[in-house]
Image (cartoon, rainbow, N blue to C red):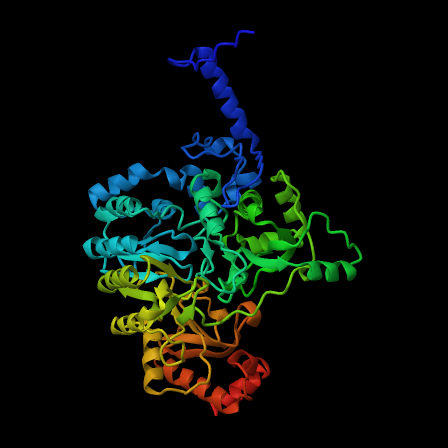
Length: 612
């Protein structure tokens, strides 16, 4: 037999028949809205792809007169931002960005919203400038990148960056003429700001000690990075009804606060014993497809600013299923979330509208080519209690002879000089790697035993701290009125005042507490999750103040803090905080945590104790 000649690929331009076929094929694909996943690799990357997604610019939407509305919503009922998104996709405004930079001009209201798709926020009247928010998946950043951002902050910003409560960084006070330069410089550093604002998936977070936590079940960074890149390369995961948060937890000693996210994945171990015990106590003991190994539980609907945590769905997911399941869930939210009322446009409210998880999970299943597995939580070993302040201090790593050093950054703000010096320290004493945390702190991993004491001394000289105690650390603050138009008070300034007061008047606690100050109802600092929390308000006399809440917590301390005082003037907050801590110290039982102490008292009892 004579082997057939290899088929040669066609050359030259497409024929008219070929063009017509391709146009019809793509029109059908874009109209179908169907997706077909075939699986995922261990690194979290899909081996199949959504049929209706594209990374380039899609065809322009039909004229407004031709549409009924967004995703079945009558156009007349759409919120104002939804109309702006329909008129022009925020991903398609590069020419406008260039034009505004050339003219050194700020955008109008619709384009101010659209520019957020590129991570650019015009924050007037707080500051007549842009803030740029990055995307740093799993909080991983290299010394080279941090050093490059320090230079950028010095050249075109305010010479500093802010660590956010999504383990991310923000550059501030960028003039319009510099926005394109900022975007391109960030990309040259191997970073991006795409989709970090507006109605998009925010920075994908993960356990900050993942990969070296001695107690972790699995390194979750590959899945956080896999989802990050999947989002960047699929346009249909932008322009959601509202913002969306996703987190991965390794099941180790340090938490990633998954229960505060729209979607939270946390690792669990299924053993022969846990599976056997679960089957023995279940009316449906089969649980086909579940074998001993590492899986993930999935929680949905967290939004602590609205006083709610994510809840367990009953799903038990294999690691390779995380990215496709997350993408499918986001698409269900995109297609069915509320686009009329911005206050009801988060995932929590879609779940409430549908009466819980069953319909949401049914819609998710339709977008997957593999069956979802369900099992009670008892099929897996319970998650070990987290080390509440394990992001601060010196801890042994799983790698012999190496340690990670967690350092506190007061209110999350680092100047360029500190950023450069941290980069040097990571190079000299570690492996050039740093981790940002959701507690606005930094971790330097892979430090040899012989160098930890030297590194700690160097960190202290920079103005940072490494111990979690009431007088110095665990104080979290959002941007505040100095940099955010929504905030009612200078939260970072007031947080610094609280820290300074507690240093001077040390309450001598046996264990540290967390203090969270947030500027508005968006609760970027998650005030309802702090041992002590404050949400800013304007007092009747025009002064800045706070409503004070006590007893919040995440993870094994999960609970919404209760309001104890309203309208406390900002200048009275430091003394009140000291009084709360001293009262706790003198009235708690041996070994009783702050959360336990507050929760065993009624609001009235706490008010009486703290008002005397």
